Amino acid sequence: MKKISAYEIALSALACAFATICLTFGVYSNILLFTGYLVACIALMLPLSKGSYVGYALAYIATCILSLIFSAARFFDLLPFIMFFGLHPLVNELQLKIKINRWLACGIKALWFDATMYVVWRFVFAMTTTFPFVDKYIIPILLIGGTLFFVAYDYLMYKWRIVINSLVKRITRK
Image 1: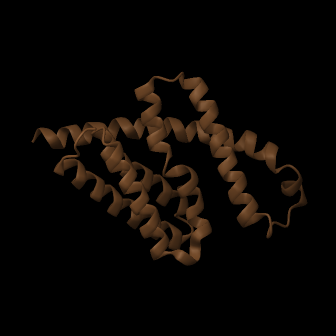
Image 2: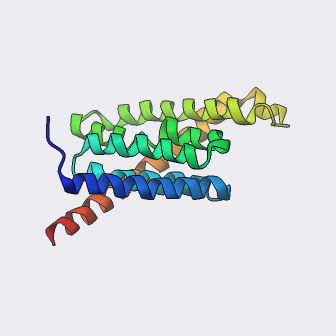
């Protein structure tokens, strides 16, 4: 097992701090909730840019725990991050490392995203929705709309991965 360096520990701590701040701010602002998920995911890419899976795992776990402590009353707002968004960068990195077919991986990840959105809908919105059409057709809505959204999101995350990797590489050269 590779020993984690002080630099990787610092990247993991920075990722955890930034992700926790973004998630907490997103949860309390409501309008910026998805932006909080997005920026927290990008922050969690920092340890992955150095290949530190242990650092990522610790940053992810600490981010989830700290975000729950800071916004325990808003647990259901954090549920999508805990179930999907926070783990997505790791899955992308493992997909590239293991060299899984990108279309197969995209399909599996899209189903994972749709399942996460269904669980969130079931726990949060199913009790309060006033649209019987949505209740009746939630699965096709998620499979079509959720999958289209996910494909764009996944593409965006791969682009951000390239940006983060180049920034970290530039920092380590100096």
